[in-house]
Amino acid sequence: MTVQVLRAEGRAATPWLNGGGVTREVAGFPAGAGMTDFLWRVSLADVAQGGPFSRFTEVDRVITVVRGEGMALTVDGTEHELAKPYRPFAFSGDADTDCRLLGGPVVDFNVMTRRGRCRAEVEIADFQRDVTVPPGGSVLLVCLQGTAELGAADLRLGEFDAALLERGEDQLRVDGVAALVTLRRLG
Image 1 (cartoon, helix red, strand yellow):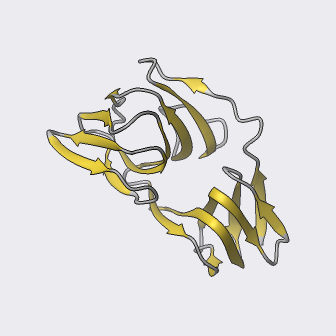
Image 2 (cartoon, helix red, strand yellow):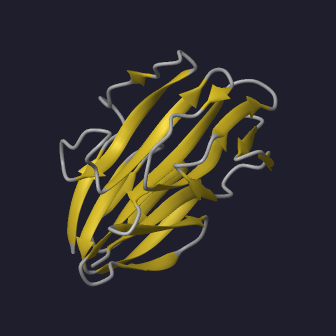
Image 3 (cartoon, one colour):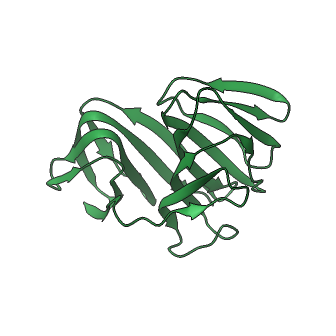
């Protein structure tokens, strides 16, 4: 198994243009890609106040509340309440999207993929399970609470640490909650 460890410490916080929060990129592809040329991008955000989301043309998004009372997202005029943690919500980055916080600041987990070029599946794990990297794809494991361990890789992840798996399979043990993001390139 090929594993790249991505520790939470040292991740730079990038302030939002609207001043409503900061984002910390966990991983992206290709490495060093900006906001207009990534194939996929995964981040954690500290959301201090509600407001409009940035529009990302031809990008599919999945957002998951990790900490806080949750948020209500209005996507193209339809409100979706994300009040419980660890429930991924998929929507189009093309959509007019606005956020209202339900009870103060939140931390959310974001996955963005370039539509037609890459697809992501976001699963939440709070138990032991096998992890298999699909042919030609990747799996990003992000520990959202507690700890997560990859047995064969002899790797222990703390809160918000991540591991990018490029090939192979392993046994995942979770003492808390982890996100498994399976990334598949299309075409």
